[in-house]
Image 1 (spheres, rainbow, N blue to C red):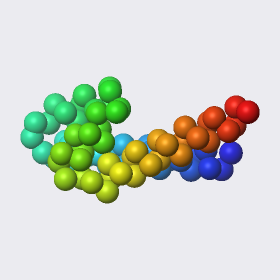
Image 2 (cartoon, rainbow, N blue to C red; image 1 turned 120 degrees about the vertical axis):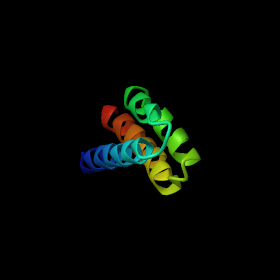
Image 3 (cartoon, rainbow, N blue to C red; image 1 turned 90 degrees about the vertical axis):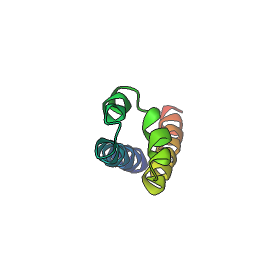
Image 4 (cartoon, rainbow, N blue to C red; image 1 turned 120 degrees about the horizontal axis):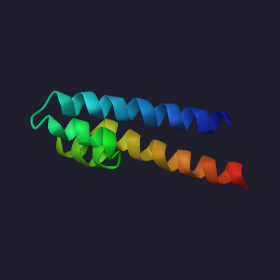
Length: 73
């Protein structure tokens, strides 16, 4: 349960960091779309040279998915 909560917190934090980074660079509409369609955030973040935040986002999503799967068993 702790891994599940930690992964969700890490995913949420990375998503907000990517949102802020995308909001600071034109075109700014990408930040708003990334909030509605979350998988676009790491993709556009990678293009905006936010590689660490994008990698953390993907890693946290994988850990969260694995934790949800194991919790369901």
